[in-house]
Length: 269
Ligand SMILES: Nc1ncnc2c1ncn2[C@@H]1O[C@H](COP(=O)(O)OP(=O)(O)OP(=O)(O)O)[C@@H](O)[C@H]1O
Image 1 (cartoon, helix red, strand yellow):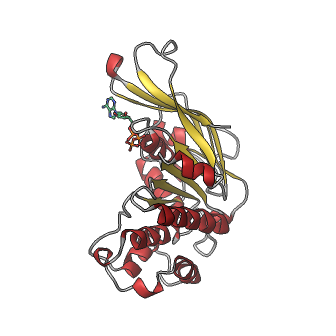
Image 2: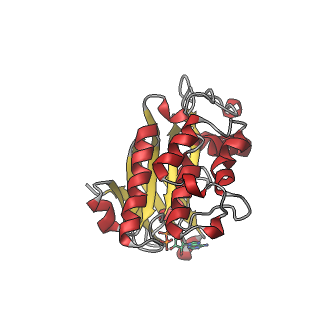
């Protein structure tokens, strides 16, 4: 373990005061090399690799690649929901001291990983993923409630205004259009001040005009709060039109790995 690294069993339930959005602390957020995940074994296995990736606070980047290339798998790795293959270096800088995520997985410290996930990450799904039995107001406040943060605060008021969902707060998700659901989902993802927002195909169910608006809102609100955003999408043209940094899936060199297939995610520049 590096000097200054938080020990595996001491990752705090809430590393930073609830009054200070976690995303507003300084420095890079994620540094990783040799990150990978393998489905299956032997000849039929499929491997997803991220050889090297640094994500800065306030940065929005897109994972692009064809269907089945592993974009959602990379989100799961970054979202602390899937254990990386051995050999990965994976540091998170969301807490006061860097956290060695690979060491947490090796130690099977699932409680610490779950606390980091709840406190430091917000999720936006393809079709909103809102809880159908809760109102918009309750959906937006759910992560804050689970973390014991005050539900009605200035941050939420600002998000509601920016997302233009003030008139929808007492409705349930079934009473919203798909575009409205996605705006509420963005509000929910950002409401607890996460350091990282992960979005899986957040615009692919929307018409082109709405897709641009939703992606633009996600990027702008995240920049404003200092959160990093990673968007998995097959919409490469939209990513390029928005000028986002692109991490692109490239088929693994089959000479290098003759017995299995997969993709490597690397900067498109
Ligand atoms: N048990 C398994 N054995 C082999 N391959 C698997 C297994 N489970 C999943 N896969 C493969 O892992 C790959 C990665 O899937 P993933 O959902 O991450 O891709 P994706 O790029 O997000 O796809 P989509 O854009 O279609 O949502 C897929 O090609 C899938 O077939």
